[in-house]
Length: 117
Picture (cartoon, helix red, strand yellow):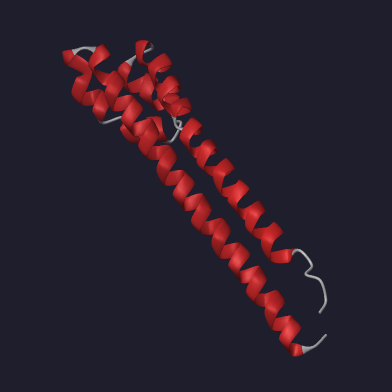
C-alpha cells in the first residue's frame, strides 16, 4: 500500500475516533442538563421540608441512580426521579439523529464517485 493512502486511512480513523468522543461528550452534556432541569422543575412538588435535600440529589437523578434518590427522599420521589432521568433521552436522541443524518449526507456527498473526465 502506498504511503499516501496509508496516511489517509490513519487520518480517517483518527477523525472517526475524535468525532465519536466529541459526540458522546455533547450528548452526555445535553442529557445531564435536561435531566437536571426536569428534576429542579419537579422539586417544588415534594414540599418545603424536602426541597434542599431534593436539590442535593440532582446528580443522582441525572446519573440514573434512582435508588439513591429514593433512599434519601423516600418512595414518593421515585416516580419523579425516573421521569426526570428519562426526560433527558428525548433531546439527546433527537440531536444524535440529526447528527447522523448530517453525517450521512456529508458521506454521500463526499464519497460518491465522480465521473472521469
